[in-house]
Image 1 (cartoon, rainbow, N blue to C red):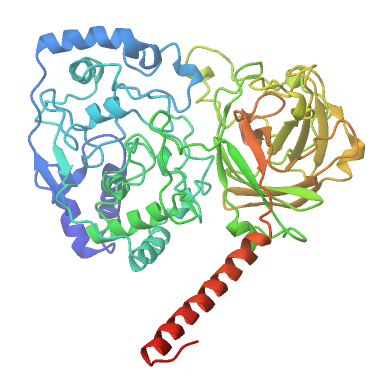
Image 2: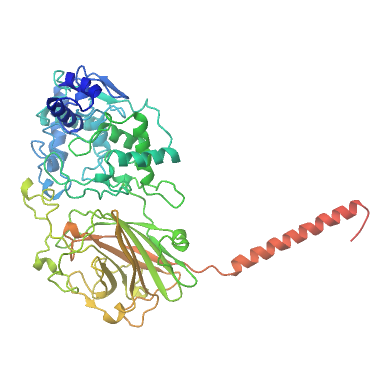
Length: 599
């Protein structure tokens, strides 16, 4: 088949049906996720930037035995006794832990379909893919970093065991069936991320049909529900705006080389192919520069600082609300909203009370706020690959919180792939996407450092809750406990308003206003210069989220920034004018003195 591929490239697609069939088979072998890539076989041409290297030696028996002890202490709980990705914890994880048996690994410097780099003798960056995965973990999954927990020797030992005993369908040292064709990433000169390069990359992702999966704006909404991995489990395209979730980019998310590597090698086990065979090195740099340009940055265009403990953007727990004179614009692109600082709010699955949310598809929301003399307005934006609106109203009332009796259940704790979270991820009843935010009603009376319960308050400190749903509703509630039905505040609902609610290209934009000062005891009173405890909640309808099955934040603090007094602007101006006059007088006096004149 290799011999047929080369002449077919010269002939184009005008050959016989047999040649077309061979071409199709060849494409599967190049872009598929298992098996040796065609161009890496003997006699096949190597893509530009790749180099053939020797297979590594097999680890010694004592390292394998030592690695077995490490594996059955630390790794078996997710990856399973036989390394099939079926450990006791696997059924509650999405994506599921790696099944080692087939020898299919995602993050590599090797060609599509090849085994990753591993050499028990040399943990050198860029030359030991599996060691780096174990060391740094895989963001966006349950695979943690093991650096600091396992020594370097233990990491090499456990990988010696995995590669020789748990990879069963292939053999890392089999020269008859395996080759290593390695991307020479350190020696390939990058193309700087200029405006021209980014524009070329933007066009290439259209030409190469990347948007069919990753979406028009790269938020992973192009094909969010039809993709599966090699084991038949649902898989989602990457959201290019969250580079900290890219596999293989932990602690180095804004490094464009990571993106270039992925486009060059593909991600085995997933629908993401290698582009090494149908793009040039230059084109892949343009694509990588464009994808990297989409990742969230601060207002000055700089990469967000990353927390080394979470490998997510660092959190500032204060949500500043800026003062505005006059009306607050409904347009998020207006100058007043562009000037206002935004905050990254991290979200996690609610797992304190049933129904718990072990898999959350929404892991953050961006928040801005402005206020004037009458109202405070919040602007929320969060990435959601699907717009979820329930086909019919739910059987429960809006005030009910104990909705599991209506079939809203947490992911079932069954054993086996058929009943796992991963297998059922796209089979949930679709409810409304929703967002809510709450404040303690009597926040002024809460003695520091005490906080009310983050989940809908308690009997002592009730909370003021505003909840929006994708069906267009906006409601106000009083919450008195995680298991207590809400009290609806019809009178207050007349005073709150949805200023904007739009889902577009994988992102929700929601703007909600509420009075700065309420008329009743159940209304939160906002004071300038005070830190008001705030909690945020998000529901993803396609994840079966409803009731307590949701994403929730920690405590943040809304802070109304004091207006800047006019004197701050007037006095410096007067002082500057005075200094200019004084300096002019001094210079004139000196000039007259030199001429023998006096003033």
